[in-house]
Length: 406
Image 1 (cartoon, helix red, strand yellow):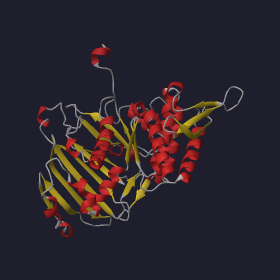
Image 2 (tube, helix red, strand yellow; image 1 turned 180 degrees about the horizontal axis):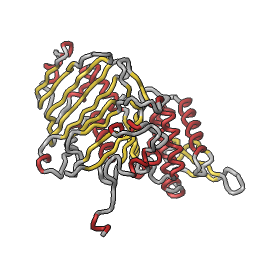
Image 3 (cartoon, helix red, strand yellow; image 1 turned 90 degrees about the horizontal axis):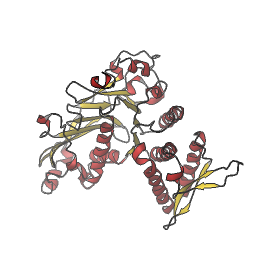
Image 4 (cartoon, one colour; image 1 turned 90 degrees about the vertical axis):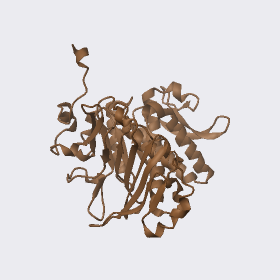
């Protein structure tokens, strides 16, 4: 599970900022919380709000880019400095993630700093999930100098030192080095998936179709049937006038694709919308719902953390609200799965999330982005988050420029 993600000198984020999942003492929505043996409580949900251009999308992108760079050996490409301050253009971009291992026995803290295409530093620390436990260093690296501090890994220095390049990260050797703690970071990175309604609505459907075909090839037809059943159940809950969905071979490759079935005005189910016509027949909002539900079901069935940028994009408020409640309900029943999303539609959040799950992003007087959690403010349990936000109690609200108002 993700405990915290920290970045520094990344695009609009100049100073060190953290997205934390640590829960406060509030007793609202207890089903959203996972409690560890040492008493620490972690939220399974994170909501991100703020005006346009404050950095909401950039924060989500940073987590996804970081995780994908780990799995694709592209960490040296992650230098994205804050360009509004000239002093920071030649400074490193830094990332840090704190997670638990899959068995929830250890906290793991992995970080890296990148300047242009050179990895300046890299480190990994671990701490047992026990009261009064101390953090210990697995390794520290500065440029090409590596120090494996944990005794059982000390012998790896001679193995990796000759092959490590300035642009290469130690974590990409995690499997060959057989460092369990490092491999857990790699596994976490593999289980993060983005969904942007504007960019992914068509791709999301194709993405899920591709993976379902792979499951069929592996002989896992039962899991595909279960997925299709759940997909149908979700779609029937949505007022988008799609009556059912099936999988059938389409296209020159003969692979299975979703076919959406609609009834005509006489109640006959004889209209089939396949891969060739769905992008022209369905509206942007309907495609968004179909794609979002498909990737949602696939992600949490495969224990992926899902990151959605502007969850309510092109979806009616009532439907978006119902979907959000359903998603959170499902996520809270699952182990090691979290859900992170941004939205401009604040009333969506009033009944769905805890106060400490709400993160507000704003730009300070230097035009750099900052993250503040709503738990930092005095908020009664029965207070509406949207009302407090619109009254400006969480900080400055987006408005038209003074010149335009004049």
